[in-house]
Image 1 (cartoon, rainbow, N blue to C red):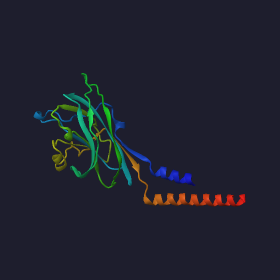
Image 2: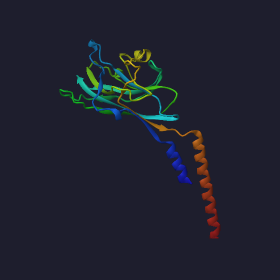
Image 3: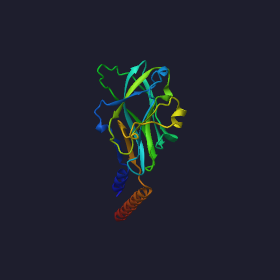
Image 4: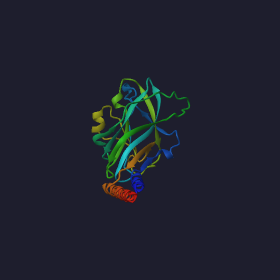
Length: 234
C-alpha cells in the first residue's frame, strides 16, 4: 500500500519538455546579439522566445538557448529571464532572473564554423498559468561595460513551435526594455529560437488527499497486523 502511494506521487511529478532543438541543423542562427559597438548603434541586446506551458498545473524548472560568442574585444556577457508576455512586450514583474553568463569568444574561422554552447538556466520550480503567454529571454543590458562583444544565437528559419515564437528588443536600457513594444519578423514572431524548456507537473490538491488517505490506510492496516501478531505471541 505504501508503495502504491509512492508511485502515485512519482506519476504526478512527471516532466514535460518544449524542444525546438530537435529540428535544428546545428548551425543556423540569428545575429548580432550582445552589446556591440555603442557608437555604431550597438547590437541587439535582447532575444527571446515566447511559450505557453504544455498543460495545466505545471512549474517551469529550466530553459536552454544555444549561443556562440564570435567577435569583439571581450566575452559576451548576459543572463536569462522569464516574464509574462502580452503579445507586444513584457508585462508584470520579473518572474526569474539568472546569474551572469560570460561566454568567451570561440575564435571562428572563415568560412564560419559554428561552436554553439548550450546555456541552461535552472529555475527553482516557477509555477505558471496555462492561460497566459510567457517569454524566456537573454539580455546583455545589465552588463554593458563599453566592450564590444557579438554573439550568434541558434535560430530556426521555420515555425516549429505553435504556441510561441522569436521576439527581440533593440532597447539599450532596462526601462525601455519593459516599457516599449518588442519586435518580430513578418508573421508575428512565427519563427523560433533554438530552445528547450522543461516543466514538472504539480499534483492537484485532490491527488495529495487521495495519496494521503492511501498512506494513512496502509499505516492503520500495518498497525492492526502488528497488534494481532503481538497477541498471538502471548
